[in-house]
Image 1: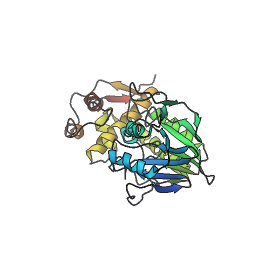
Image 2: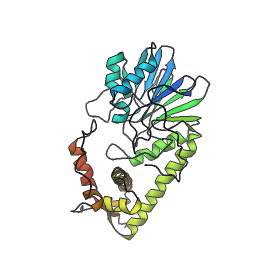
Image 3: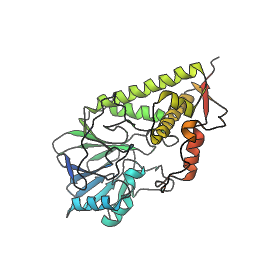
Image 4: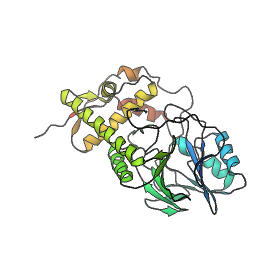
Length: 322
């Protein structure tokens, strides 16, 4: 969700269907899935290695995007397919690209998708093909960033959706965890990477500055939640309406997920307590359709949608101190 008070970057809409240069030995193809949550689309990165191409985040389940990756590879073998996390806009094309190339899929050893296991399970600090996996949960429980040294010596981090150059990330429970997100932000802030290459948006120079701003922004939001709870108790939807000025339905839903993530962090820290839920949906939520007019994204079920609506009824107050 864009917040233009922070030093986010913008870029013209990139050319589609071709490999665009990023750094020496690294290119990207921007998927054809632009949107309010994806900016111009998902970045699929191509890294030139001695044994072929490493693909980071093959993108959404779009046959044209898979064809674009294969065309960009040409006669060069695609050796491995690497996932930052299991959200469908990053991994949706993995099986199709694997079927076309025979390349194994590398991902965190505990997937957020029940029953899914990567061909090559990764752990924190696993090293392979010049990459080092860093487990950075928060946006997703299975989120990985990847450390890499470009051929010009630049120390970079493929940052997925953990830190993006164009926007902050949604943290949506239960897979998203605000306490873990804070810890993961501090982890990458302590590094000396020259650039982040994010899952959406352009290359990010001096990335520690934006990571610090993102953490400060979350802490400011947390303080605003605590201040509101000092006045009265709140349902998740009503508090999101109070704190966020969002008109787009998708952003309204995202705001409730972020507020819930903050509240659950505060609950884990014994700063808030949960009350009986509201019995009626807040108007912001009641006005939304029960389900999308099209098919649900992979991994999303109607039970998930119903639980998200139910979560907006949850009500919290400051914890009593003895």
